[in-house]
Structures are given as C-alpha cells and as structure tokens.
Amino acid sequence: MQAAGEVMNDYKKIRLRNHELRLRPAHTLARHMEIRSRSESRSSSVAHIVRDWRTDLIEAHPDLFHPLPDDPGVAQASPECGEGWQDLLERACARIRAAVQADGGTFKFTQIKEKYGTARLYWEGTLSPEADARVEEIIDLAEARSACTCEVCGAEGRLHRAGGWLMTRCAAHAQGHPVPEKPGWENVTISHVVARGTKTVIVKRRRYVRETDSFVEIDPLIIGEGG
Ligand SMILES: [Zn+2]
Image 1 (tube, protein in one colour):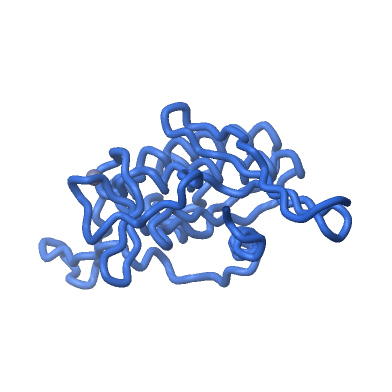
Image 2 (spheres, rainbow, N blue to C red; image 1 turned 30 degrees about the horizontal axis):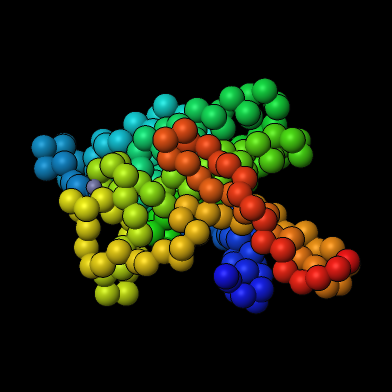
C-alpha cells in the first residue's frame, strides 16, 4: 500500500510535467542531430543533415512539426530518443493530426525527448478544450507505451537502471538491472485526484495495456475517511 504522501507526490510530478509544456523555454534546434560536412560539396562550409527516421517523421507531419522552410526534415522538436520509439511516435502523430484537423485549431510540437527512461512529448497551440483533452490523452498513451517499449528496438521492455541512468530496454538490449516494480503498480499511472471534503482523497488510477494500446481503469486508492 502506498502512503498518501507518496501518492500525492506522484500526482504533483504529473501535474508538473503538464505545466512544463506551457513554461518550457525555446530550446536549440535538434542538438542531437548528426551533421557532417559534405567534402564533395563545392562549398566546404555546407552542412548536410543525415536522413533518418526522425527527418522522415518530420517530413511526413509538417502540420505538427512546422519544420524550417528551407529544410523540411529539420524542426525544433526533432525526436531526441532512440529508433525503438519510432512506431509509437508515428501512431501519436497520426492520432494528433486527426484530432487537430477535426478541431480546426493550431498545434506545434515543441520538444520530443527521453527523460527518466520514458518519452516526453511537449506541444503548444490553441485547441478547443475537447481537442486539448484528446491530444493530452494521445500523448499519455504514447508516453505510457514508451515505458514498456525498448527504446533501441521497439520490442516489449521494462525500466532498467545502469549507474545513474534510467532506460527502457528489452532483455537483449538491457543494461544494468531491471528496476523493481511495486506489486500492483505495473504500468499504472494516476489519471485523476479528487478531494472529498477535507479528509478524503480519491486517486483514480489506470493501467496501460500494451496489447490493445489502451488504458483500463483500475480500483481507485481512497485515502482518508468520511467526507
Ligand atoms: Zn530491444
């Protein structure tokens, strides 16, 4: 049983994460992106962006990435993560595109990266409250999927710790040791916290099911009494 304080701390982390997308400062363009000089070029100063799944993803979704006008494969939010998450990002992009087009609002990815072993997708834009909620749900699904998908190869994986690093890996690509999961909390995230009166807090939880790429509600944690 998780103590109430711990649950609230987890919840605060989730809210903080959602706030980050509003507060995140502009960051430098795709710092991970590999740049090499083309020695064969007439001008040795011309840099060439190496084509890979990231540039393909950006070029396939200019409406979401808003790439540079003179290079359709380069965008602020070029994914800073491994190829194993390509599939879940493509899925998220297709879903977000549908939601944004149906809504008629604006959307731009501002950053896609790995943090503490899972994917983080940040965006800015103006959508109706319904479309905003839909996009957040799509992103929650993508981030939950990254938590059980090897960042290297895309196979089913779990969180590992190697030295000071957290990473989601399959057995073949594992480094360090699997991080023990709290029994009953496998693939579980907190979706909502409701305060009842002053004494009771209801923590709504859901579990990500990798096979169906969906969430299922599980028993809420009820902390306190009365109210
Ligand atoms: Zn793997």
